[in-house]
Image 1 (cartoon, rainbow, N blue to C red):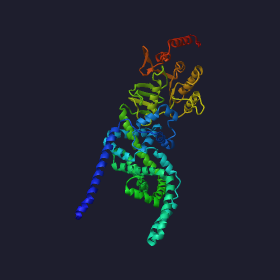
Image 2: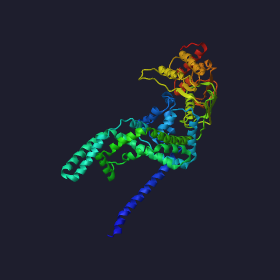
Image 3: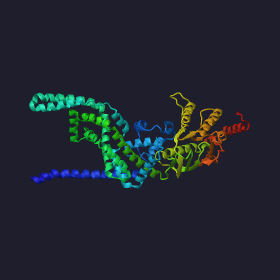
Image 4: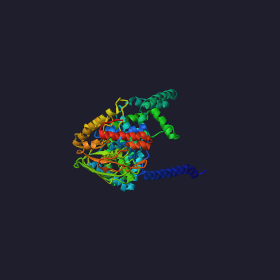
Length: 558
């Protein structure tokens, strides 16, 4: 066989492998671009395990600001579900930043305008957005853990004592050199050293292996950041320039950490198999791990700043995607000089399919009345969610939103605290007390209360709730309260504006239009609903008679 024939036999399989690799890479890139285009402006389809979702809040809990939406308000408004429909982020640090952003109303116009500017830029520049998203996807998310939690634990990890590993590595090298001097003697020494090094290796690895995934993520973070700066996209020039200033020290981590992304003994790659055994014998990755932990601790500031820049870019694309998905939105008009007023035109709830639009323009606190299931609670949540979205992602689900900057609280979806042995009433008054404690402040409070003091009897409920609501009306607060107690509309007539929802009865059915009307409610439907559900006429007729007697005499009697 001639020389060139042998050369062809060697080269042709290599070329076939190379061509196949290029083809697969191009196919994967096309698939990724197709997926990015399809997902943009659509509802996200993230898979949230309980463990992973809990870890998303780590960044907010440890690095978030104190002026945040508290747990009661967040849960009252189903903000977890709102976060999920906005979370079209590509990276783990991006979704943690977005969660923290939604929990932290902002009071600075320039910050909110910058978030909006980025979102509008990516909405108007598809090619640039896709290039950035491609880089962000290379960073990606960790399936079961929150990245900030693990990076934080890596940072505070005690300084690793790698001296024993260096000594064992040196001893192994000396034993191998000894083979050249006396093979018989040093062959046994090499075998013993291999056994000792492997035992020590696995003991160390059991303690630090879980951190390797995070170090690998840090390597991808550096590559992602570098890649974004190389795109030279005008709309994110500030962030690119800032990353360039901070990334140089992190290149040391990149060079030291390459081994953590290499090698896989579970695979069929012979080179990876060999590399794994070299690690076990010479403790290469353990020694490198100590260096990386030390470097990360020293360059923590630069790491956090780069993660913040990347996550802001990722969040802005998610905001842009959400705006495209809802279609009908407006840029809020926020001011510290608008007093306690709020004006909304055609506002709607983001979680309701085919929602009903409502409008309101008020400078006074509001009492909402109306029959059961007429829409009072949903309207309270609609206003509260829009207030939060306006002061976080600078997006209002309305034709117009104009309001002051607010601190936002609610007391709505409460329940007994069985484990804490607290009744519903105790839970309720504690919830209201936290709002009372916030009454005095430079920034007005916007609060939403559904059925004030529903956990106690009628006389004490009306007496106490009228005074609590009146107190709110006198403070630097704008309160929206829903109630079935019509008496409150008279007691609070001067401090509160009255609005109501109403229904239409057709035969054996009650129809709601879920529209907001000025004035107090004049109709009731609780007893009528008993009949529609199937209660007998004897109960319904006697219930109506009992109510009529009380209205006439002021005395309850069966």
